[in-house]
Image (cartoon, rainbow, N blue to C red):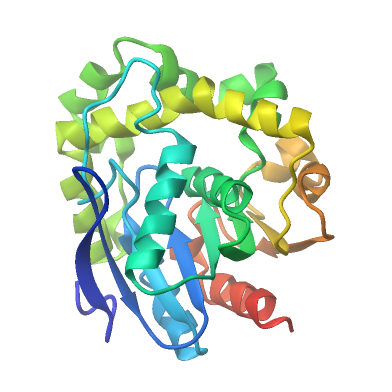
Length: 292
């Protein structure tokens, strides 16, 4: 995928015993870590990462644990192997291996949960946080009314059904319906390779199972303890997704979790903003990270 990430280096770096993350990095300047969502890989950022590098940032794009070409360790009964706290620890180890003591992190969809968990668990490492199309996990679950359940039923199917893995692996492309014309050929191919691997499907489901259990517990404990995100925060959401319909003003939900005022950006796209409106996403991130 050198055509997607011109000038970026590719790596597989160990971050925990038996676990290596695959990804790419490039550019020079302050470091920004970009985290993909479900069921994408790091290639979802292929239209944003080079633009950020051109603006003077070092851009790091990994496949999260279990996703893409990163390691897929055996799950555990408590779902801690694929919880956000474990993934956040992967990322701080990754950034240390790449020589970045301080970094900004931006996450989309499931990656947003890992991003804010990283900011909560490693406040000395995270210089800025951007969350894209998401609110804190516990806040989403506590607002999960019939409207949410109808729109986002897959959360509960993935997280609770014993049949989910069998159903998805029977025909992953029919389930996920990736659109090559929107994604771009190489990004599409990377996602197809991932979702047609049963090990990836199992790992992605474990991410959702952790979300309904241990991740929620971690959020509840942090909220009860009054822990808040100390870094500057940008809340971004897609105009044509359902964030505003479900939550009204998503930034208002983030506000109690943050020590500083929450900045906002609304992107004129559907859910996969980095693929559908990369110029807007790159511009919003550049303005936020540069303090413009």
